[in-house]
Every structure is written in C-alpha cells, then in structure tokens.
Length: 230
Image (cartoon, rainbow, N blue to C red; front, top):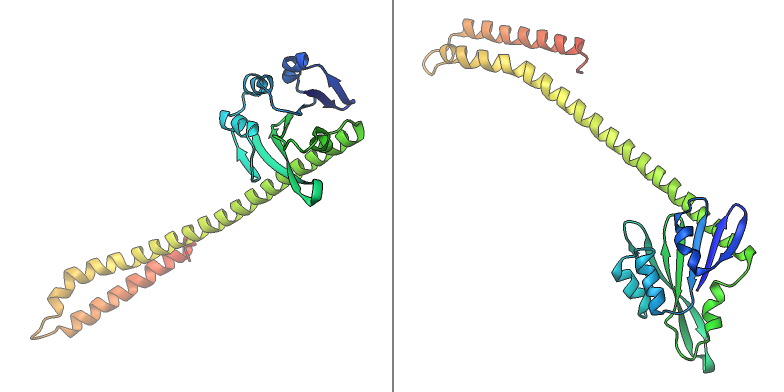
C-alpha cells in the first residue's frame, strides 16, 4: 500500500503508520493506493476511514459492472478499463475508488491470474506530474459540480417564485370575487323571495333591487381597484 499527501508544496510519500496523523490534517489531500486486497487493507478501510460495510465488501469482490454508491461522508465508485490479453482475449481491469472531501482511496482488482499487477497499476503510477494532473482534474470536476448545483438552485428558486406569484394573484382575484358576490348574494337571498313569485312579480321593487346590486358591485370593484387587487 502506498500513502501519499498532496498539498500546495506538491506530492510527498509517507509510511502507512502516519495515516492516523494525516487523517487529522486539513491542509491537503490524502491518497491511499491499495494494489491488492488483504485483511489489513479491509481493516484500514473499516477502522481508519469508517467506510460503509457494503462498499468494503464490494471492493473485496469482483464487480462485473460499473457502479456509483453515495454515502453520507463518501462516494464509492467502480470503474473498468480494457486490457488485451493473449490471442485477443479481453480482460477488464477493475479500479474501486472511495472519494471523500479530502481523501481518495483506490483499490485494484481482483485480477485475473493472467493479468499482471503492473497492468492494473498503470492508472496509478509514480510521478509527481501525473499526480498533479489528477488533482487538477479532481478540482475541475468539483468546481463544475458546484457551479451546476448553484445554477440548479437558481432555476429552482426562479420557478418557485413564479409559482408563488401566480398563487398570490389567484388568491387576490378570488378575494375580489368573494367581496363582490357575497353582499349581492346576501341581499338577493333575503329580498328576492318577496319580489319574484309565481303568480305576480313586483317589477318596481325588482328593478330597484337590481339597481342596488349594480351600485354595490361598482362600489366594490372601485374599492378593489384602489386596493391594487386588479
């Protein structure tokens, strides 16, 4: 297992015994590369990083398809790369990744016995330049993700504001309708039964009543307009 620390000063290698101290630091980025699975590696994943047990189990076994599992404090990613073997046979090199805010843990394999370990480690070799490039790519992806999140939140707030505005306008219009129709309905229900009958209709009182309703409607509409409801 190879332990590296990346900060503004560059990339530095460290002994595995320094892992607990490096985990406490917040001024850089930690990368632990595990070439082959072992019980010691599983203990480090569980005790030092506290990864989800299902993710640890998946990193131990062979995964035939890529996968992404999101947990509260880390993301588990499984990717594959093709490797051409003898007589054109295609092997898949598996790389499992535990990605956190300030750390990356890579686990290689399991490997087909016909595939060399050097082939599996091709994606994580020694070299400061490549390490810096990986870090730059990681930071670029992080910035893009943050920008997309901010954009999505802005779009969501915009449409939410539009919906709230429409609901407010609808409520105001309903208030206008209620204010106009309620007095007229009350007046017609009390007086209408006395002026409109089957045998004889009192036309004069009916006309006066309709005129009163019209006047009330105009007064209420003018009042609602002054209130800015329409």
